[in-house]
Image (cartoon, rainbow, N blue to C red):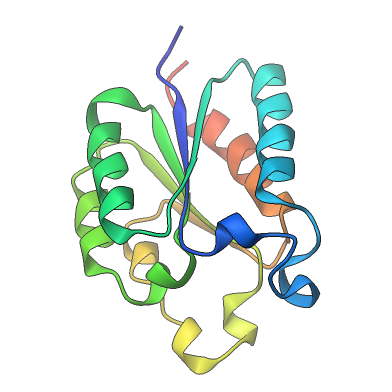
Length: 146
């Protein structure tokens, strides 16, 4: 089997479905993982789905992806707007990187309008709710070698 797609989720995404459902919806991260796993099976892709509230853990996973992953789908959460460390780790990864945001970060507070991760991402999906993860997975299927 080919290398998996790493799906990395940053801080507070473990509270998806509970935290600000008017912005992020009522689906949980487990619901997102189940939907992605189903679509990945249809697309003959393997996933490694992970979440951490810790920047260093996300950096470690991105570094591991250098040898272990075909591509990265990342929702860095608030680290989008603050983490040069995550950007630097992504810059050392040779595969495709897609950035996902559940909300439209450009319609929110001004500090959310800039994402360091976007400087490395091959594509950014924002404002489509949790469906953005599925859109990213469909796109990733076209970007990675068969």
